[in-house]
Length: 117
Length: 113
Image 1 (tube, chains in turn orange, yellow):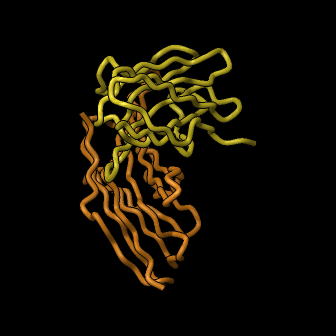
Image 2 (cartoon, rainbow over the protein chains, first blue to last red):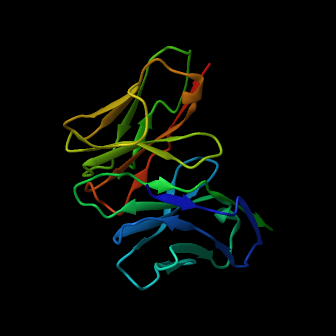
């Protein structure tokens, strides 16, 4: 079974600074997707960024970028120029690339990101 | 366009009762999945439905069941409620079964007393 580990229960960063959230995962699959979701107090899960395992290039979405290390099974999220609106729980998630099967997303336990004004 | 919509947003049930939660996917999305999020944890996968058929099931007891309708909306049913079923139930939709863009609704808060 796949597992996703987020070793930082809580992180704090000053507004406008850069912060990196860590995620490691365990799988025997070679093709899969990785995601970072943001969950603000409203509780709706919002997709921040995704990465296909077959792509070597790290995904980037505006101020959000990932460092995907496939051999190390590591998938960290970097948030540049942190803003107050970035404060939320951040979840790392994994999904197999199976076309016919449906395993759902496997989530980590989350990292609570605090933005200090 | 409307996102994933869920109802009800909050509800309180008594142990032993039954509950039905509803979900409407984004227009055009054929896959719907359900997740349970207990306070302080990440969501856990319960079911995935595609084209009205169950395509995946997580490690949940048979008290949990679901179905998908011809319009791709879905219901999650939980029988014989336990206190431990208190959680946020999230519905997610995607275009295809193996879609890599998965959108979530705002969830249904279930409290079992």
